Length: 553
Image (cartoon, rainbow, N blue to C red; front, side):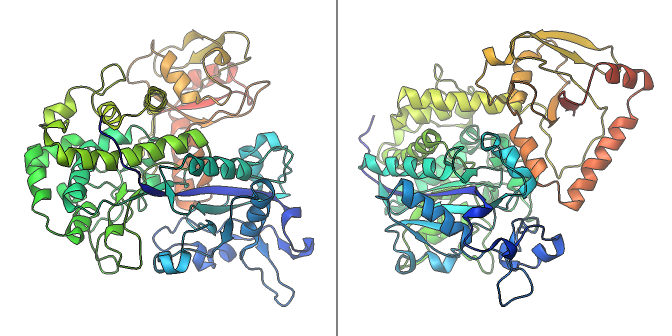
């Protein structure tokens, strides 16, 4: 393996910051807790025009000289900074307002301290839902609020191990303990972005572009489906770098459900060499940015930064650092996951440097190489081949192998909000009566007769916060291949923990969206009508409100 040079990098951690009302430095009578939708929608800074469903969803403050409530203006940032200083006094932080594009210049931010800033693309979940996100805190629903935040790092370097230690300390402090009056959590609106120092050699950048294009689908396996191109919750924020190289409608801004697969890339381009030729003729960084972040428009002449890998920061100007921004990762507050994704992103840039000097080592000579297998650590095809060439540790390989298996498991039965909904019969499955005995699952397979399956107890297979979807997928192998499921409701039972899929939490968070709410309601009503009376009676006999509900696709 090649020796990797030390590289600068930085991280942006998006999350929901939750806090008790006593943490606010205002009087109790100044807090307006139940802002109506019309009021919240009038806070334009919190409702990005490109993301109309992201509406302010936190409390308001009524100043002494005002009659109408306003949105938070630095109060949550002050609470977070105060608690970080208590637990990490050696790590300098500063509060900054919303960091728009023009404010990211080095002269404005300097990037010498950790920056605490609001993130208006991440909305609060509503006071009544905070307790569900933080079950260990025993929260009273009307006493806690949540607010979208972002921690932006100073310039870090791979040479210094203490830089990752800083990340771990800050994340741990932001999450807090059940005894604290603050905490943090993640929703599917949250992202985790890694900036890596951009190579100055254009040939290296072009090699990186080829890596990104060819391995996009493979690398996406490291992330949950909600962070993949074509998924509704990623629309407008996270799209494929392959758009220029595919037959995509430039005027369709929300390419939901589009085909960005390697198969489509092959159909459009024919060979790996043709893709190389289309990249190799590029003579300027501007052109590379425009093609990798296609389309370029008025207001974003270098391309759209909302791609899996953002190349537009190569050409922002002399006042800005030149970086490659990796945007695909879902938000996380797990220090290990943060560390592993940093290593992968830095490793990919180092690989581009290595392959540009050693072209024979590049693992893909033709498209057949991309289809020779999905890849496992034992058979390192695809993304595992990249990890091998990066020189990642065996522990890192095992970590990513676990992620891939987890996401592949609960991908079965997943429904994308925004696609045309197909009405199919409702399937109700009572599951997991106790954690200490075998679980009986009764599956009404319409129009067939119900089947009973005996499954191992949940606790013997997974940690407490298991993904229920993964559990079902692994053990319902006796069912027909066409019988797919997704969780639509989960509740705490006895000693079991809250269990929900990534997709479920996303749907819940957007339950207030009237248009999507009507779609879901219509779907459920049509599904209920489709169940024969005899089956309805059987379902009612075998279920009660405390048990889990699953819906068949």
